[in-house]
Image (cartoon, rainbow, N blue to C red; front, side, top):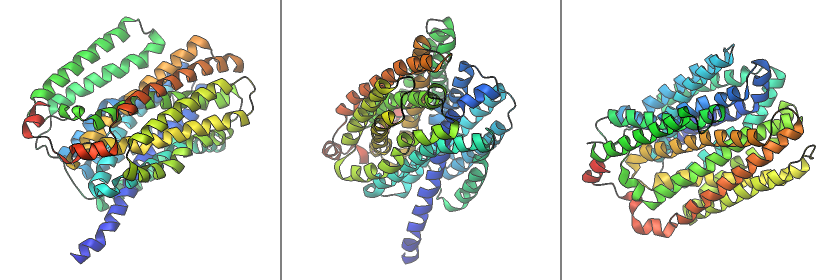
Length: 479
């Protein structure tokens, strides 16, 4: 018993480290590519639609297969699937680096997204399995901080690599990290599984088709129009497949997503918060990385360094927010975080003018970044704490699927607003489009405040007992 107790902290520490590396490389890759958008436009002859696809191809696969990745981990072993996901992500990163056309890059980005869809939900599951409830908020806070580090490092790493070496190295950098991580994970992580003895294959297919159709619509809308037959057809198909998924989950013997969890206010509100937050965040990331280069004329490294005041906030604030959430609850951080995110982005839009000095943009970027940082760990902690520990994979998969869907909608919506109000013909025209897009991003974040207001307090969560009460067999079977 003494030997086991002595070994446990080491195993717990390795779990936190290796799971955090998984979330780091998946977060880094979104931001690094965003920083490289102007370079990709010049070197590969990419259009605005192509640039959107370099982001959305990854997010599309990510969003569509997030629930699948979590379910596979629960059925076949979380460590095993985590290692497999890291291997797929690493191979796809090499394929991205070897791409000689924007089409090849987009295909490789899809495969990257598949690997990330396996990796990311399992990072939270592994942490939740390794840490007791009273320490989970602090652990997820560190996880959120590492996510922030990936976001913060992205612009600087991307800028330095693009200027100092070549754009291909923004993908090559994933290869050694991925190889080392998958080897260590295979030997050091504890294997665990979810409570369901069978894989819900019908549910997996219906969920993937529904999420694919629902994310395909906003991805294609900027190119073909929201009123086009393709977009309307995709939305209708998405609704039909989602209705089929929900109907099936109500009668499946072992549903991949017990619908009864959505009756738990902590679960449903946290998922709503992350959806609106990510529309605002990822859409803003797509626009802000281009603002500093196309609109304000900075080189890639200079842009990355200046954006750092925004992207570094999760690294600095998320661990503190995660630790404090164990004491006072998640609701205050989600609520104040979204208010700061929305207010900061609105301030940024108002302050941005052709030739504006960097000093005028620093404070609004910091305010928005602090808001984002307050939401990162507390949303994850809230959704995982709302379900029994054995279903943490289901919770993480659901939350991350909505996170990625929100990101896809964010890029599509803000790109459409940008095109309606500006273009790339001059810095002034770019700024016109940027201001309109960021005001929309701010408004969406503030819509998320409504969900945060409806979230239960720490006392209410404790009184309900939902987080420790497994669903009865009938609820598991019927949702």
